[in-house]
Image 1 (tube, rainbow, N blue to C red):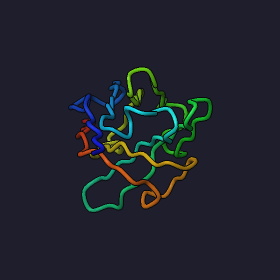
Image 2 (image 1 turned 180 degrees about the horizontal axis):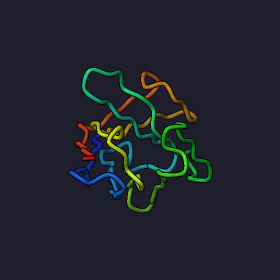
Image 3 (image 1 turned 90 degrees about the vertical axis):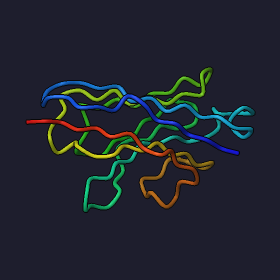
Amino acid sequence: QVQLVESGGGLVQAGGSLRLSCVASGRTFSIAFSIYTMGWFRQAPGKEREFVAAIARSGGSAYYADSVKGRFTISRDNAKNTLYLQMNSLKPEDTAVYYCATRGGGVEVAAHKYNYWGQGTQVTVSS
């Protein structure tokens, strides 16, 4: 069984920062978390789920949506089976439920390419 659990969401004022975490567990990840591509997506009310950032298996390459580039940083700690998203200079338009996801292949920006998903954590940015 594969489980992804996000945490770290909350309410923050515009310009503030939050750090999201996603812990992966289950037999698949206990064997080799490091071989899985990890990504962050978000979904605002009434909108499609959209790509935010992804990080390659080794952690050497990271990819970002243009809307978050320069403000968000994705990272992973393979020893702790944990994915992070540091979000700085938050804007009201960043308000959404943030999901972590994983896939066995390389980095993709399409949500349907990811096999496993967490339950999401709410991020609300007030103006």
